[in-house]
Length: 94
Image (cartoon, rainbow, N blue to C red; front, side, top):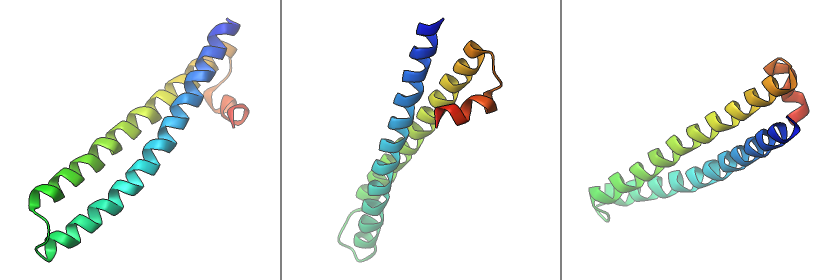
């Protein structure tokens, strides 16, 4: 059982790390999208570039949601394994 708790904890931390990375990537991608939109508005970039940049932001947003779901699943697994309510486990994981 201890190994299952450890594995779930590692999964939890890994998913949290992926959420942070995805957020940083998304922030940079949104800035790029804004720049490309500005270029498009003045006729210096094609609409395709805007669409590609927007698709990249949305793909990263979807990945971030999935990583958040994975973190929540791992947290709930830990709660079940240690016999606690999920909200009681969260302070120990911080």
